[in-house]
Length: 438
Image (cartoon, rainbow, N blue to C red; front, side):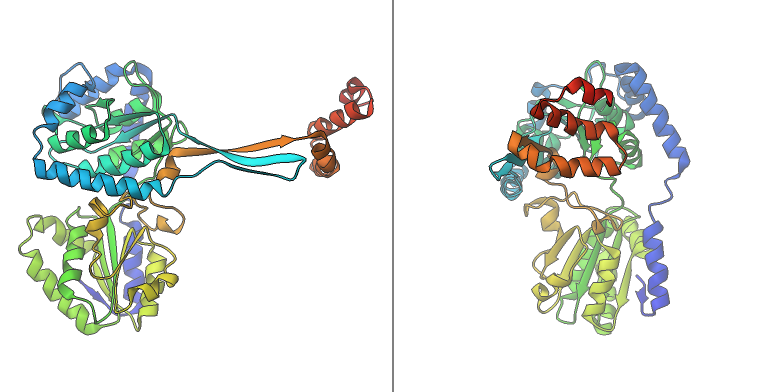
């Protein structure tokens, strides 16, 4: 893992970070568009055809029945189920705090407000197969349930018919009934457009591979989506009070995700930088996913040395990391300076992994610098807000001239007449003459 000292080296590295996920290419998009068009036109037949081709699965029923969910959930180890229950309880408690209520106010002549309503139907995508991501089920479904979404459809691929017991245990724990054993762009298309079996949703959430991410990007507008997630990343700000072993472990915790993951340490201590690099080599040698982590560290990892911690914070804000850990002597002192981060982990006893699974806050976070303008997945992603207006005649009268004036200057004659026709009605003028322009 390289140590960067000069400003030129840092700028070069930041450019690499910004461009690391940009090589998706037109070829992938063309393939995904073809799949989506096929699903839109032929529905279930297309979904089954692609499922057979990509997942080596020949079953004719897209659905995983409640009975299949229960049977497979029973295969999950009891200690894992208990861990999922603990996590679910904490995640729900956290997201309950995000609930919004409708509100209104009045000055006696009008009523103004905002009406909060949950989305009617949401689709959740969960990666499947050999990998097991029950935490994805919890993090994507619980906020929707807390928001009050009535219908939640979940898609999870089952390559070669493999149904993961831990994913099913999480599904059963949350009481989901509508589950489909499909994945890839065809699953996104089925949820976005609807098929004979799968009813169209209003929003699609959940992570996936490049084909899933591209499909979500394409169907946006037909439905809403949570975000276009990029490679995982962690940035740690540390001073010489930090534990090098903790830092190395947390950097590797992200590096093992995939080769594109970005683990970065920013510190004002050359001694800490050298110690962490040595600790990384030691811990890396014992890691099962050593090859993946090594590529991540070499390609997109760095230890950056700054003059002081203030400079470290400024650099972090420009990167806007998905996960930001602060391991300094007084981490809370830096919090007011942090402008951009998906999630902030304060102190050496708050590793990012707590947030991945059980702490409570959502682990679906903005990546690739998008923390500058976006937020973690939350209850607010599963609601819609409608403005509410109700005027009396007196209230209308007070605003009529103001509205007519602005409508006139914008040249919108019909807008202006919606006011004049009411004024004419009130004063006894003939509405017909006003509408005709006389």
